[in-house]
Length: 88
Image 1 (cartoon, one colour):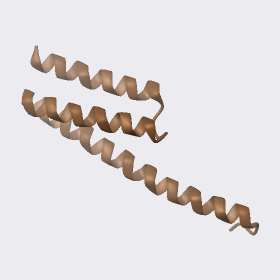
Image 2 (tube, rainbow, N blue to C red):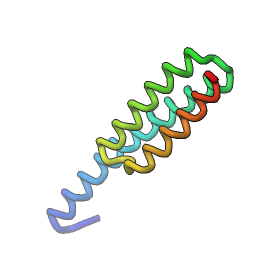
Image 3 (cartoon, rainbow, N blue to C red):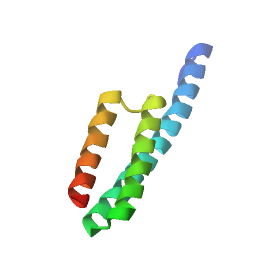
């Protein structure tokens, strides 16, 4: 454990941001899995709604600084490709 006051404060803020980041990442993974499940079932309407929600969560993760913008673009592109293959 840190002895210096600023280091103790830093450890505390790191812990709170770690928990916040974990919540956002877990929520993001869940929405992506829901999209993939809808896509494998072949339900285009449900997959479309799940894609919109997943894209929103990915963009929010970028805004919060949890994902890099290029990572988010890659994830959204992959999901869009799956969705386009499903509807085409």
